[in-house]
Image (cartoon, rainbow, N blue to C red):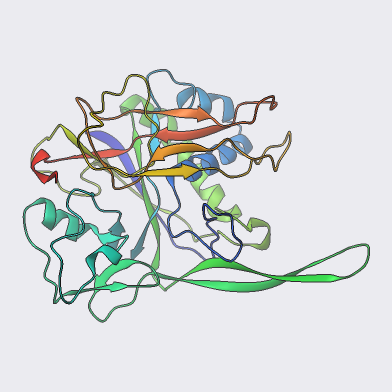
Length: 332
C-alpha cells in the first residue's frame, strides 16, 4: 500500500473546465489528472520547487514519485467516482437509466465489486451532473452560462459573450487522491504538495482565473494509504487495474491490450508559459478514467512532451497511472 492523501476542494465560486472542443459555451464535468498535474506544476514554479518537482515526476525514469487521480465530485459525505467499465452499467433497469451516470457513489462501486446488486428503488440519475444520486436528491453541481463583455481599450466598443461554468451546491465540491511512491517520497513532497494545492485554492484552477473563477475554500487533507482511502480491499488483488487517472503507457508497462475494458480520449489545449503562451499543444491519445487494464503489474505510465516543434522548453502532459487493483472476476 502506498502512502497517500485525499484532498477535498469546496469551490467558493464558479469553475471553468474547458471541454475537448474548446467551445466557450460548453464545460467539461471532469477535471482530469493531467490538468491537475499541470496546475500543481505551475504552483511549484511560484513556490521555487519547479526543477526538483519535474525531476521527481516528469523526468524520473522509474516513474513519478507523486501521482494524481482526476478530480471527482462529492456532496456531503458522499464521494462520486468514474466506476470500473467492467461492472458499469449494471443489468438494464426499467426504472433507472444506469448508463446515463458518468459518476457513481464509491459505496455503490464497493457493493458491485463485492457481488451485491444495486437496488433500483434507491437511486436515480441526475441529468445535469451525470451523477447517480439517492432518489429525490439533486447532484453536487449544475452547469450554467455567465455573460460578460470584452471592452476594446482603443474604441470603447464592447463585445458581449457567454461562458459555461460549473456552479456547486452547498457542502459539495471536488476530491482527488495523491499517491506517493514510498515513505521517502512522502517525506520530501507532502508539505510542498499541500502548499501548492493551497496556493491553487487561492489563485484558481481551470479557466477564467483572472475573473476569480476556480477558487475554493481552504482544502481539506486526509492522510492514509491507497486504496483504503477510497475503497476497502479485503485482500491484495493483482491482474486487473481500475484507472482513476488518465494514462499514457510507458515502454515498461506490460498491459494486455487484448483483454480488459478501456476507452481512449484525445487531449489537446493551449500552453501557458512565461516564455510564450497560447501555442497549441500536440494532440495525444490517452486511456481514460474508469478503464480496467489487465497487466502483469500495476501500470506506471509516462509524461509526454507535447510542446510544438521548436518550442523553448518541454511541456509535459502527465499520463502517470493512479490505479486500484480489482478482482479479475469483475472483468466482463
